[in-house]
Image (cartoon, rainbow, N blue to C red; front, side, top):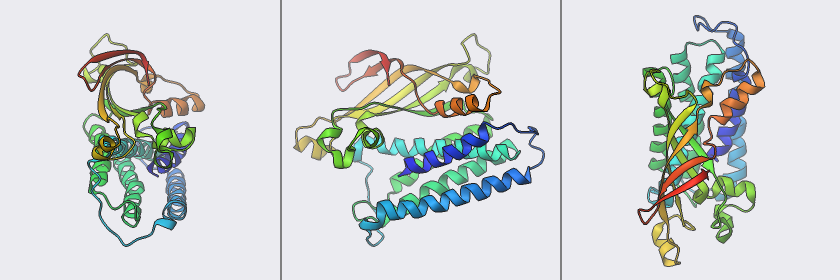
Length: 296
């Protein structure tokens, strides 16, 4: 659900990100571009909310209720909420920068837009019989947006980025109705195959006083496996051993790659959301360190 909102906004922001801005000073707004952003994002926002309500929640209606799911999926789903909110804020900020809005204001309005996309999903969950309004999800959404906004306001750049890597696992086939039926669904729903990374820009963190290549980052990763059910007690009851995974690896920062080509700029912007395959160390459930030549 949140993934759909993310890709919709990314599509809009990518178009603007790939376009040249006549006046990069941010001294005055480009009214025409601002109108395009407001109307475009408003139409997409409204259409996506209506479509989401009809496609996902129509058959699950119930009275509004709360649901504490903080113990589920080893919190991988919560980190996923933070990732989506972070990337929505990042994408929204780029849209507003395109209007020649000052960077700080663009970051603020991009963050507002991020929460505007995420909150209705939580409200819909509150009316879904199988789910419920989760304060844990709301906190995770705010954490992701705050990671983006605080860095923009303090550093005027993203020295630490939240990224994602995905791979297929054997667990989805054991419960396809929840973990995904088919390649595309499994990539989105199977938490066993999702790893989230904090990617540290070493060049920026050293105040650009280093010989370390600008494009080389150090990343800390978190994931989990062995999860057929959300709660550990359910997994244990059926003989599944769910466990957390921690990673340390290298990453690539595409924001330092410059191009005047709008298509290339768009591809680099989207690629910077993803942790590409690279060498990594894994701390497994037995506190053993495993080396991966190319982990993704």
